[in-house]
Image 1 (spheres, one colour):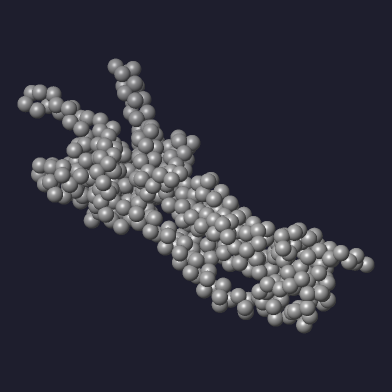
Image 2 (spheres, rainbow, N blue to C red):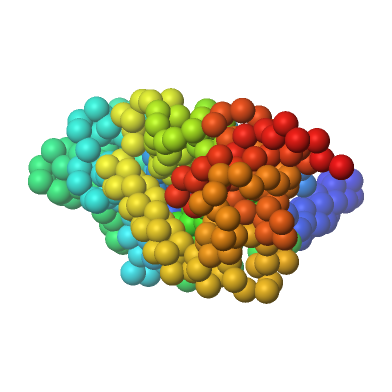
Length: 460
C-alpha cells in the first residue's frame, strides 16, 4: 500500500511538471497579396520553427488572395511540416488565402471574418476558363482530404467522415457544386465563423492570437514572431509599380544624356544603377528571367552599335529599341519563356501601362530638362563639358570651309569629339576609326556634326 501511494504521488508530480512545461510557438503574418514575398516569409517562418524545434506554428492571416502558384507552394510547405500549424483569420481569407487556411491543422476566425470564394479569376476579376477552375477544385479537395477522417457510429454502423468535407472545399471554387443546407448551384461557398464551425472548417472564434492559444489549451508558452527581413522590405519597395516606372525613366534619361556627351560618365552610371534596381527585385520575385535581362542588354548593345559604329539609323537601332522595351514589359509579367497561358490579362495590361507611361515621362522630361540641365554647373562637372547643343552654338566661323584641321579629343567610332582651336565639338567619320590624339581634317558638316577624316599632317 505504501509503495502504491508513493508511485501515485510520483505520477502526480510528473504530471504537474509536464503540465507546466513551456511550449515554443512561432508566429508569422500573411497580411498581403499572396505573391513571392508571402512565399518567402512562410518559408522563413517554417524554417525558423523547425530549427528551434517549435511545438506550434501560428499564421496571422488577412488576405484577399493572390497568385495560385505561390498559394500552392505555401500550401505544400504547410502540409509537409510535422509541426502543427494553426491559422488565425483576422477578417479575410479569400481565394488563395482560403486554400492556405484549409492546409492548416486548425482554423480560428475573428468575429465578422470570412473564408472562401476561391474561384480563379484574372487581374480584372473575370472568371478564367474551366481548365484553371478544374485544377483549383482538385487541390482544394485534396487539401481538405489531407486532414483525414473521423470514425463515428451511426445506427450501429461504423462510418468514416472527413474532418473537412472535400465537397465544401470544392464548392468554394465551383458555383455548380450543390451542398444541401449550405448553398445551391449558383453560389460559391464563403463561410462566416458560425458557418465554418458548423461544417467543421473552424475550431472557434477568437479576437487575437493570444485567445487562439488559450482556446487551443496552450497556457504556458514562449512566442517567437518571425518578421520580414530588411531585404524583403527593400524588394517590396522596389517592386512598387510607380517606382518601377520611375526607374525605367531614369534608365532612358541616363542613356539619352550619355549619348549627348559620349564618354563614360555620370549619366551612364545613373542608367546602370537604375537598371540594377529595376531588374534585381523582379529577378528575386521570380518575374524577370535570365533571358529577359539578356534581351535588355542585347537591345542596349544594338542601340550603341547603331550610334557609334553603323552610320545612320536602321535595323540595328530599331531592333535595339524594340528588344529593350519588350524586355522591360516581359520582366513585369509571370511567364515561362514565351508561354503566357498562366499570365493574367490584367498583369499584361499593367506591365504595358507602366512601360508606356515611363516612356512618355522620359520623352517629356528629356524635352523639358534637356537644355536647362546640360547648362547647369553641377551637370557640367559630372559629364564632359560639351554637348551637341553646345557644339552647335559654339561652332567656329570656319565651319563652312572644309579645310580646318584639329585633333581627335576622343576616339571616333565613328562618332566622338574633336578639338578645333580652343573649341571641343562633336564630329564623326565616314566609317573609319580614328584614335584619340590623331590629327583630323574637316571635310564637311552634317546636322550638328563635323564630318572629318584622318589628316596626313604630322602634329608636333
